[in-house]
Length: 243
Length: 392
Image 1: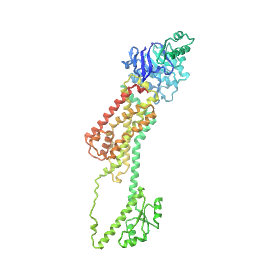
Image 2: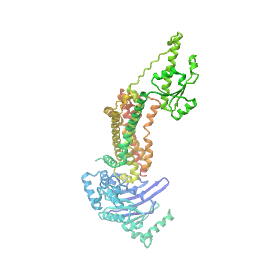
Image 3: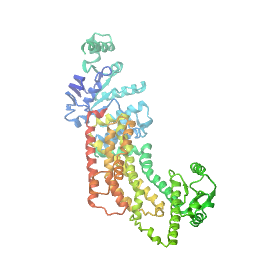
Image 4: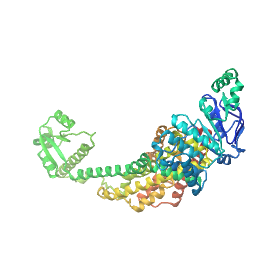
């Protein structure tokens, strides 16, 4: 479970995130939806602890990300916005590197890598250098890297950005499988269809604030819009007046 | 396994597979100096040997006016070539390079010589050309020799002791040992060695910082439960390992070059054998973490490979500054200078080359100051890595 409690962050004179609270539950996919520059990445970065919150706190399985950083991170897999790989290393070496840094023992790491290779369908290219990989293969390696320590929670920042249709579909299937395993998945996107296709819960963010929070149907009903897309636009439209 | 070692092994392996890093760290960087040095010394050697063996060539115009002088020059094994040139034509001919040095004996030479008045001769040469300048100097020396010989004869004829014209008897005593003289030439060997040390780690320092950022792998790395100090430490250690390899290759190459360059023929003896090379390695070792930390520190502030490359090429020049400063002010080895990294290594290596005794204090001061500065830089770099701005 991932919780944001009254998170805020200020860069200079700009309030990037203001009083953001929400909960992403285990066994659910939660989508953080908002236009570019709404504060999604800043929010997520505070939740995986590379940015210090200006106010409030983020918790992973009840562990404060700031106070108990290492413990919280052990429960958390992260696929940041830029999820670059090491081109001169093989897929296996890329995954192993992060596993070792998580402090995993060799034997457990080997088991886990084999398990991930099977689950993500990457057995055929585990021993190849990442340099010439397709987008689909790269996202699989990056995901395996984030999941190597078998975390109960996964944060993905705009994971489908720059992916083609095939790779996007592959990623969706993987996320559904992870959800079925009971993991808590939180991902950000500015693409409405993306969120509608995948999420159990949606948190809409605009101008650094939470504008709506609920199941896609609830949000649609609340705003009285015929479709989720229309609801999204209406919710955002309100902020023009607010902010 | 400690995170620090994991980072070290990964950086070591990854860069071992990178052609650019390998070429610059293990080939261009360490071999540049020895090859350049070998070529330079060989050329100097050929030149000086050729010069002293070759007879002086002199073009003479107006031989008929000074038969005595011509006989003298011929007796001194000067290769004379006789032509009839006006002063103007002689200037043109030297300028065009068809003749190196031209001696013109004017018509009035004979009459003035017989009258015991200063007899004029013209020596035409180009002093801007280092080759012909030496020939002109040799010609001038021969003419002066002839002149003083004649002067002594004239005095003797008049009953005066020629010794009256020699109030001083100057004897040059040159205390430069053969090795000492070699040090002038070997001065830049030490710089080449320090250069190779830095070149060995240059690309690794860039790749492990700016490269990590440019590739987009930095944020994932920073979100791991690993202390930033371990990340920085592992990266700097990997950089150090490549620098040590580069240093070892460079020193080996120098030992080989020194075996083949016959320095004794230049009147120098150089002792850069295996033993000296090992002493050099030990002297430079404390400079390795300092260089690695400095390059990693600078590269940590850059956003791209290209930007890092720009800044780090100026870092490559940093160790030259104290060395250049020392040679401009011709600083002697002093204990107080041993606290300046790169300069202290330069001075210690020079002392080893000159086979001078080395004070234990100097060695400790050199190593200690370099290591302390390295530690400070590592801590500062680790602190920078803990900042939010590291995300870029």
